[in-house]
Length: 167
Image (cartoon, rainbow, N blue to C red; front, side, top):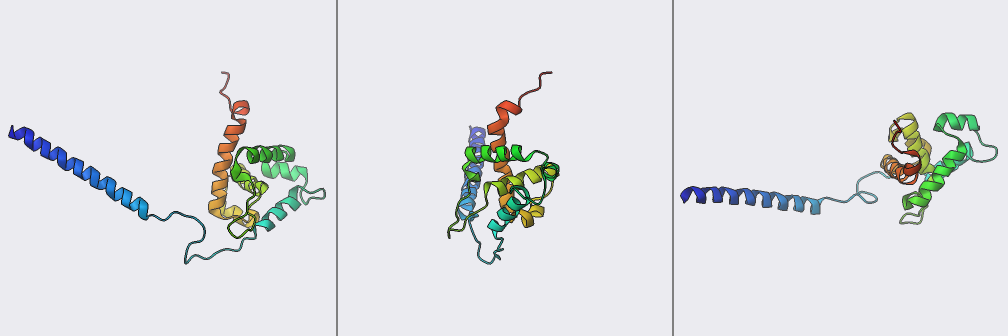
């Protein structure tokens, strides 16, 4: 009988350790700051996001653009019309790609900026930090764009283009 009692005590001790661990984890999650907006002590970079959209638009999408269709195809690995089709598809599928104002009313990145960032990362295999000067978006925003872009592409074009091999 005493052997059974000793095993029961060890089991209770294990249960107490598990409960203590869960409570500690819960306490840490409550104390953890959620990343939203500016953080005290951090330097805000005035990126001028609208200038990034204007630069991309003037470089590739106006009638007298800086770079031709040949340049576009080489840089984005697709035609301009296919790129715009993808922009429209992901914008209509995922609300993330809509251009929205921030807390003070300044418009955020355009759908074209977000897709340019994602496609350039995929086409060249480059880091998000490398793109921030051209698209005028922060590194974390560019990474978020890539994640949303990949999910949207799979959801929108998965049935048609991402099917299993016929082998």
